Image (tube, rainbow, N blue to C red; front, side, top):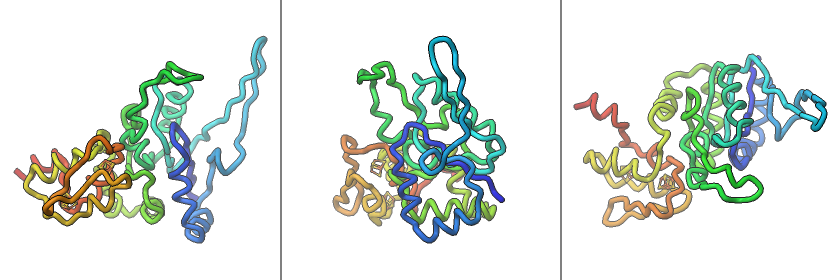
Length: 242
Ligand code: SF4
Ligand code: SF4
């Protein structure tokens, strides 16, 4: 049975809730996989080490994970987080950046530290800045259907379906509303369909005279507008076309 793990980094659990929203499909998925690690849903093997001055409780990320669904970004100022993401990569065949924070940093891109009780925690990056990511699914959160479809495609080895998510894993780490400007509008590819505006979950895109107007001050860098645009081109692909 395929061994699946949900790894919670600096995220809000909204991606897992979006997956749980599938109800009966979630039961199908849980019936088809061995959920080997998911701190929100299951108790984990813990190791307790007692030293002179403290008790250390460690929850072990298991070895031999087939698919790791990683939610949240990595705080570079938290060595536990950095160790967790490195261990996840080492132990997993396929690493999926699930949701905006893991894929592109999302709202955590705006973190600047200075808050109690860890004012030094100021640098949050997408997991692809620390490890190689195989598939990335943007969105804040990604839709229920898109998570289910991606998991089912990964379980079935449907590489045609997964190919765009592999592309986003390669090129989407700096996602923001600027993507549709840089990769679509500035390439004369925009056909004014309005998909990007409909996809934006914070309404940072207005259609003005048939073209998207990005209000960057509202953009939370989730990357879904660029991912859903039917005319999107990543820079490397544009160069190939030329
Ligand atoms: S413009 Fe909207 S959809 Fe696009 S990255 Fe920003 S928040 Fe996400
Ligand atoms: S989704 Fe793409 S093609 Fe459609 S309006 Fe937005 S940028 Fe233009």
